[in-house]
Image: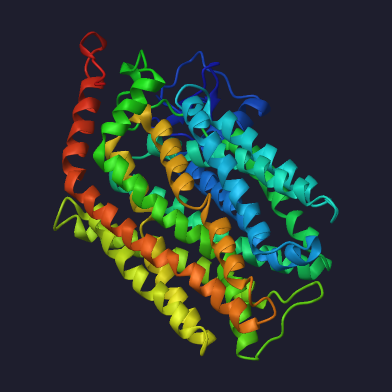
Length: 505
């Protein structure tokens, strides 16, 4: 039998049950007492609600929110050609939409990381979702004379989404440990390719159904508002370090400057963050430009014609979105399974699996630009294999961070890793690729072949960056065990009685 704090019985509970409190902690069941009285209807509802606030439910809702974050981010990419025609902007102008989004995202990330280590995380999460949902909805009413307003709206959306990406993984980190945490983080980061692919699909379908690209920006906000409400109701606010059994011992916190100095000395964290930047560079560029590249390839092959009137064909965005969803699922699952198997052979399995997958991905991504001129099917096959290998490392990278950073610094670590990966990665890659493409086209503006080749030459930068990321993961493997052991020693220090605790700086 379970008992609420106001002294009423909760029907349907055994004497060995536990009750989730509003803070997300677990209170042991109490034995039945003659002083107890039956629950009133409102109290029964509250008790049922508390039972729904389990770690699994919380992880599911947070993963759903992450899907929406990335779905909204890539909805614009799914209708990018229509936006270019509507506002009459070139490749560099179109790439600017993603660049300003990522720039605001990365600038806001350290701020939300600081707040996430010190204040109520689920309030920050839900507020961020409500904010970007409203801004996205309003941006769908911008007219063709105000392209700068669309650019500004993507900047504001980046701030809202930054709060979610910086904080939500740390809640999962405080709800689970070891292999369970690996699995839950895998599910959470599956949302990146799944949400990205659904963004292309949703944007294309909504545009075709509504007859205008505006409708692509009017669907995800409805889901976003729903996710924000679910987070407020069902996601607990666990004490930081509760999964590592140090929550009760944390009485003081180190300063933000101290945290940053410690992270800068953490070699595994630094190298894995640089590797993550290489992944972001490639995925940011591909997410915006690969559908466009494939359209131009078909024009060269004379199997399609250039779009001159809206709405433009959505076929390639739909196919690319579907491939991204499937490869994301395969990549995350293969990554989780491979890492668990390799851990039986070596303790450096996490960074080594990431390194091998990155180097393999670079080979198949190079092949895209070799075969696309002759075979679209061959290009799609190379995209499928290359993306699967590239997506394999997302959840593993997050797990590396959880191993080498103590709980009280994780939100700051996640936020600063996001800042670094975006600053060196997808903050500039879409605009840079568009800029190179435009520069190569200047002398051959009427040539469909040169428009195709120029974009392909610009995208060839991505495989070289991916190889660099694989090298950074190899460097991470060199220092992973030492940094993991240091973090475990700090956690053990925090697990001691308060009088003996000393947080390592």
